[in-house]
Image 1: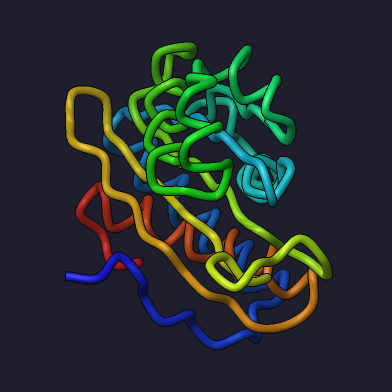
Image 2: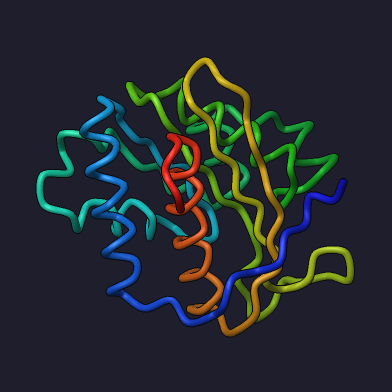
Length: 176
């Protein structure tokens, strides 16, 4: 079974992100969940999207933007060996990022993203647009998915935010 999932349509506007964030907030509040984000290629955009929702302090715990290897290690507990062996854009790093976010917060749900937004930095194995997204509920199993998004840097990051929010809704049993 492949970890690679087709990317959703590239057109994700601010209104769509706002609607997803508002729906997520309603569900998390009703179910007494708190969210933490661990972001590399989106650099805090998921946290920004959810904190644009009035009243988010009732269900958003914190966000960690960890771009460098050193930040991933210090803030999220990603092991140096994981980064050296698999790289920052890998299933293994996404797993450790999402677990570290939960371990270092008071949240019950976490999402982590790590990828290559471009325009440079891609390789044949990890082209621009490759993004790993991982989701985890405290006490549960991690789910991680590799996406290949099209578009420029902004489009890739915007699509990543949308997929991350939809995945959180799915994690708590709602449609994404």
